[in-house]
Structures are given as C-alpha cells and as structure tokens.
Amino acid sequence: MSAGRVVASAKHGDRPLAVLVLAAGLGTRMRSATAKVLHRLGDRPLIAYALDAARKLSPDRLIVIVGHQAEEVEAACKSHGDCRRICFVRQAEQRGTGHAVRCATPGLAGFWGDVLIIYGDVPTLRAETLASFVEGHAKSGAALSLLTACFRDPTGYGRIVRGTSGEIERIVEERDATPDEEQIQEINAGIYCVAAELLLEAVGSIATDNAQGEYYLTDIVSVARRQGRRLWSCGIEDPAEVRGINTRAELAEMEARLRKSIVEKWMAAGVTFEDPATAYVGADVKIGRDTTIGPNTHLRGATVIGEECRIDGSAYIEGARLGARVHLKFAVVITDSSIGDDVEMGPFAHLRPGTDLARGVHIGNFVEAKKAKLGPGTKANHLSYLGDVTVGENTNIGAGTITCNYDGFRKHPTVIGDRVQIGSDTQLVAPVEVGSDAYVGAGTTVTHAVPPGALAVSRTPQRNIEGWVARRRARESGAAAAKAAAGASEKPPRSPMKTRVRQRLRVVGRSRRRRLVGGPAQEPASKVAPRRKRTQRGVTRVRVARPASSRRPTRR
Ligand code: UD1
Ligand code: CA
Image 1 (cartoon, rainbow, N blue to C red):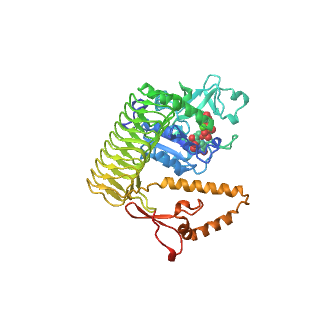
Image 2 (cartoon, rainbow, N blue to C red):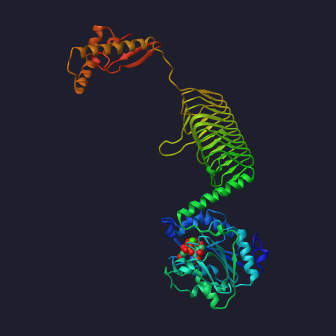
Image 3 (cartoon, helix red, strand yellow):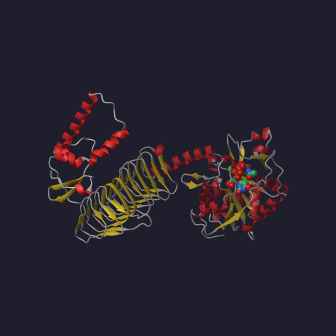
C-alpha cells in the first residue's frame, strides 16, 4: 500500500487498492456528438471530478477505461492534475459496463488487492464517502461490496433486489425490471469494491441476456452469490452524492446545485456576493477574504482573486491572477493574465492572454491589451490597443494610442521606457522603442526609435485659412438660390447622367469662367472640390483639373 494515501490509508488494512474509472461510454441520452464525460460541469469536464476523488484515495493503481473519443478523454484527464500514474485502457466497442471492466484486465495484471469501481459520470461523489466505503468493505471481510442509495424517484437506476431476510440477491436494470421491481426505491449507485480475483473471474462469465444486449457489470452480484462469496452493502448518507449525469436536464440541475454550493463555500470563507444567483465560480477558483463580487460575474479556470478586491459586475475572468485591492469596474473581460495589487481597470476593458499589469496600473475604458507588460503606476486610461508591448513604470499612454504590432505576416514588439508621455492618437509602428523620459507628441506616428528624454513629433504643421467658412456659406446659399430659381421656371428636372456630364464640362470650363466672374466663391455648388496646395506661410494655391496649357495659379 502506498504511504501517501491521504483519506483511505490506515483503515484499508494491508490490501492494495486499485481504482477503476469507467469513462468509455458515449452517453446516448445526452444526444451529443461529444462523449458524456467531456461535457462540462462548473467549468471542468465531468471526468475531472471522478479523477479528483480517485486521486485523493492515493490508490496503488489508477486505471481509466476510455473508448468513445478516447484521445480527447485522455487529453482531458491529462490536463486535470497529475496524470503520470494513470493507466489508460481502451474499450474499442462499448458493449456495456461489464465489458468495460473486462477490457481493463491488462491494467490489473498481477494485482491482488481490492478494486474500487467508480464512474466518470458521477461528479459529486466525495473522496471521503469513497474512503469510508472502502474502509467498511475491508472491515466486513466481504469479497464484493456495493454502495446503495434510496431515491424517492429511482427512475433510470438499477434496483437492488433483496431476499426475504434482507440479503442482496441481484441488481435489476430498469429496462429489465418487472412492475413490482420498478417500485423498489433502493438503487445501485454503480460504485463497487471487489476483490480483484473475483472481479476478473466474474466479468469473464457474464452474458448479454438482457433488454439492451449488453454485458452488465451489475451481474457480478449474482455471480458472487452463486459462488457463495460474502456480499456487503452500504447505504449512502446523502443520496444526492451518487446522482449520475445522463441527460442535459440533469447536467443543468447539477450545475445549479454545484454553483450554489461553491458560492456558499466562498461566502463562508469571507467573500461578499452581491447577487449569489448570478455568480458563476468555477471549482478551481480561489477568492481572498473581504473581496466583493458584483452581479453577473464569471470566474473560471484557475483564477485566483486576492483579498479586498472589488468586482463591480458583468465580468468574465478566466485563468487570471489578481493581487489584493484590485478594483474591476463594470464590464471587463480578462483571460490568462496577471494583475498586481491596487490595479484599477475598466469599465469596458479587455485583457487578452499574456498580459501582466504591475502594482497600481490603471486601465481605463475601451482599452484592449494583449501580451502587454505594464510597469508599476503606468496608466492607459482611454481607447487604446496595447499588443506585444513592454512598458516601464509611471508611463502615461494617451487616449487612442495604438501599437501597430502586425504587418500582415508577423507580430512585432514595442518597448516603452519609464516616465514616458505618449500623446493621444499615437501610432507606434512596431518593432519600435521609446526611451525613458521621452515625450511623443499627440497624433504622432512613431516609426523609429525615440531616444530617452527626446520629444518625437511627426504631424504636419497646422494652417488656418482666414474667412474660409463665410466664403463656403455664401457659395452654398448661392447654389440653393439658383436651384430655387430653376424650379420656378418649371424646367424639367435633369437626368442624373446629364448632371454628371455638365459637371465635367463645368470643371473643364472653370478657368474661363473664373476669369469672367472672379474666383471660386461664385462657382456653382455642384462643382468638383478643388485641390489646394500650401506654398508658403498663409498663402494657398488652388489647383483645379484643367489642361496643363491653361494652368495658372490663382491668388485669393
Ligand atoms: C449503471 C448501472 C446501474 C446504476 C447506474 C448508476 C449497469 C448495467 N447499470 O447504469 O445499475 O444504477 O449505473 O449510475 O452497470 N461505460 C463504459 N463502457 C460501456 C458502457 C458504459 O465505460 O460500454 C461507462 C460510461 O462512460 C459511464 C458509466 O460506465 O461513465 C456508466 O454507464 P451508463 O451507461 O451511464 O450506465 P447506467 O445506465 O447509468
Ligand atoms: Ca449513468
């Protein structure tokens, strides 16, 4: 027996223990293309619960029987806890629970102890319950022990048929039961503890003479009885623990119960939930004392929330690590990121995987960060995309800053130093560096390194055109008046095609007309906008489309 067995250890005597987890079935009643044990409950696949309980018993062998979507089920097992000691065996064709155990024979080669059989679809069964069952089995000296429960509605379960003196005779599946047997409320939980030699012999001798034409593991009971082996049964204290998941409705019901119990556990540990009914906390999440969780908050994966944090609500947080006193304002999404103490974030902000915010960082509304490392005290308060960027401490990222990290082929990094001021509407075209204490002027497109302490500006200088608005308004109202006059003389409306042709002609004839009427202010409204070109301070050239021979600068 392994020295490290936590729960079951000393009590199980000298016999080694193997745990067999049945997880090969499709789960027809789920009506799904996905194997039942891969369906998720409280943020983890069903199989993870059975494995957790099994591991807590520190068994000498842990065997998982996979079949339907075997690779995916194995992968799910491997991504939940230490899987080095799991022996996977395949049941290529799912011909019943008895057949599944028969397929596990290679995994039990040379094993002489007791085998505890559990199912991958019974997620709330606790390790403590299993441990006391195994202990009771050892004490009873039985060769085969059963865990049973009494359900007011036993629909779907195998019923325990007892003889006149109360001894177990056999288990009858619902589909094979007589109307009288259907009335039996004592059910088979599907959890057995069996001497290995009896188990292997019994599963080798069962047949398929039943309604489903399957090898029923339940038939080992009759085999053991025929052989005169001692049987023992143990009624479970809380029957809800052995409820299996067979349908989507049962899954949803279980989800609600599990969610409630997780939230209650954290409330008992000192966490405030403003609306427990809309808090979704995964089984692997950890929350610090005096943290307050607002409505509609989803905490998933291996998320860890520190002490005295506040999550306002409508948050989706997966695989994140939050320090102490973090304030997440309304509506944030955080995935696989790390957040230091005293960070403020939101409302409406998004941290994508690989983001690391140091102590005291502020992330404001409509900021998205991906693989962004922000040093202590750095702020990005409005409307920014920070991707593949490393920022030092106490730097200020202005509103509308974008790291242009992707050139269509590759992602490139941006590095920004300490105490930098990045002006609003800056584009940082990566790869690029901005040294410590540098300033970047608003509206700058940074395409090459900014040395420490320098100011980088790339915007075009501003020019003002005096009186432009008045001229434009006069032009517009002139056009409106002309249109009204045209309407009064009851000219038929021009066809759109004719109008376009006239516009063309007008552009060509503009130079002549300009000479006659004195400048663009009196031109019809429908003209094509002229292209203006700055020449010297305060002077603007207006260029219009016309033959090169007639081109001449017009002063305004
Ligand atoms: C089984 C029991 C029933 C018991 C109930 C408790 C049998 C015949 N019936 O019925 O008495 O009340 O569990 O939950 O054993 N599996 C395989 N290979 C197969 C078939 C199933 O690995 O060929 C696995 C499934 O993945 C599942 C478990 O065995 O994890 C139970 O299978 P399921 O079909 O749900 O059995 P039940 O009909 O619920
Ligand atoms: Ca079942």
